[in-house]
Image (cartoon, rainbow, N blue to C red; front, side, top):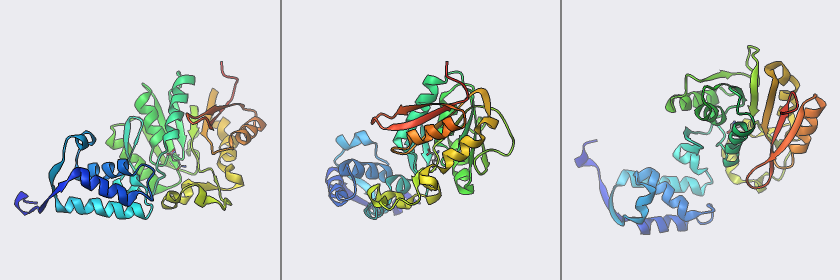
Length: 290
Ligand code: GLN
């Protein structure tokens, strides 16, 4: 639009941030921080400038977007869906309601790979969603390649876009598939953060109201939330090198059950905690790790 026709308004940034923070008080755990994130995103202001700027002129249209975002937030829509992205390790990832918002604790699965499997180069990410795990692996591990599947066509679209945005499309191969790729290949690592919330969980409201906006298919499953670990471990050996491993993210209190499933199929299993001290990751290896 021609600059002349853009309607401007003078605001005091500190005051507006405080006003929004008051509105968000019931919803957000850190309302002032969220207010600043929303303002920064829609008014294109850098976070550090909140400490430098006071009275500023803004486009009225942009200011309206800020208040629309606040309205959505008050209806519990997650901030990441409102802004359309989530920062995950080194990557800025597009997210929408076709994909789960990658969680902060999932970032740690990449550290496990780097620390305990430094030689691994060929990865399969099952249930890739936004592509968070697959794209981070190839971004951070030199000369690596990742195949990634998801049953949702729309998720694959988002993941492919994320690959392109981050210039990684030559090193990640996405396929719409129910768990394993159609072609049998041997991977060093199969990695997965599958849906793991028990379908019959009646106390969901205790988890978070925000997950109602996320795709159910990415969150819930049968057999007390264990179905995908069972399905993946059942066939994993066909897709793993002789020294290969599966690495899973698991739900609260599921680690030991996943170990049991793995051991019953002949894997050597170990449990890793996340930074909050919760048993969050299970490694199931074909052979004992050296
Ligand atoms: N692998 C993706 C992530 O960790 C998607 C997970 C899922 O949809 N269950 O974000």
